[in-house]
Amino acid sequence: MKYMKLNNGIEIPIVGCGTNTYGKEGNQYSGALRGDTQEVDWAIENGYRHFDSAQLYLNEEVVGNGIKKSSLPREDFFITSKLNTFDGFHGADWAHAEIEKSLEKLQTDYIDLFLIHKPWDNDAEMVEAWTILEDYYNRGVFKSIGVSNFEKEHLDLLLENGTIKPAVNQIKSQVGHWNEELIAYNKNNDIATVAWSPLCGINENAKQVLEEVGNQYGKTYAQVVLRYQIERDVIVIPKSHNKERQAQSINVFDFELTASDHHRIAQV
Ligand SMILES: NC(=O)c1ccc[n+]([C@@H]2O[C@H](COP(=O)([O-])OP(=O)(O)OC[C@H]3O[C@@H](n4cnc5c(N)ncnc54)[C@H](OP(=O)(O)O)[C@@H]3O)[C@@H](O)[C@H]2O)c1
Image (cartoon, rainbow, N blue to C red; front, side, top):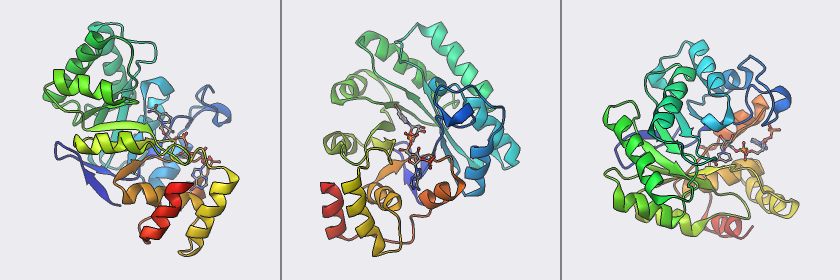
């Protein structure tokens, strides 16, 4: 595994495991919890130690239970969760209560990376929410803090009004929507980019090009996409309900893409 150093010195495994449908009936986002931790167990067996979770997914306990069941030390894992701001912000008491629930469901007394899941249309509230995350960071409960789905103007708001710089901006970056400009803006501000849904958006034409690139190295189209992101310092959090494909997605450290591969991939 390769690690990236965040702007506060904390190291994050550059390949993490997405979890938004794990432990759910029919592998569906809106499915009820099944009560087992099969996909997390496989991921741990496959070598994943970084899990991307969120309050919104309603399955933080699947990640918490899987990690506990592994009997590996908590410090071996890097856990991300996110404050559910899809419906805006409901005040400091609400935020504190939701954060405490995350800690309980994840069965931990600290979270490695905690994000504001999504910006909303109220600058004062966003600064207030950030101040709450800063407080948890200062108390050592959150080891690093960041944001998700933030555009430049939202980042600027926190850079101007916060005392701690976001460590991460987790954004959509995938084939057909690489999000170059925002990734560059993150980088210029020493904010690491995490690409969500890194394996979505791949149409047949793109797949063909990616397979051609991958054939040179005995790698699949998915491994090529993930490697491409890693080589430009983008952290990836692929998710699969298949143990073999999970294994493939973390097996991306034994080949290197050339400049000409990069050029081709950037065009797909
Ligand atoms: N911050 C946000 O707003 C936000 C938004 C969306 C997602 N996320 C996070 O990003 C994570 C990943 O995104 P995602 O869940 O949309 O899925 P994804 O990683 O983009 O994968 C999409 C599909 O590709 C297939 N796949 C996985 N590994 C593969 C491989 N090695 N080869 C071929 N196909 C493969 C999977 O199907 P199979 O199961 O059939 O293998 C999966 O359903 C989420 O789980 C969540 O944690 C965050």
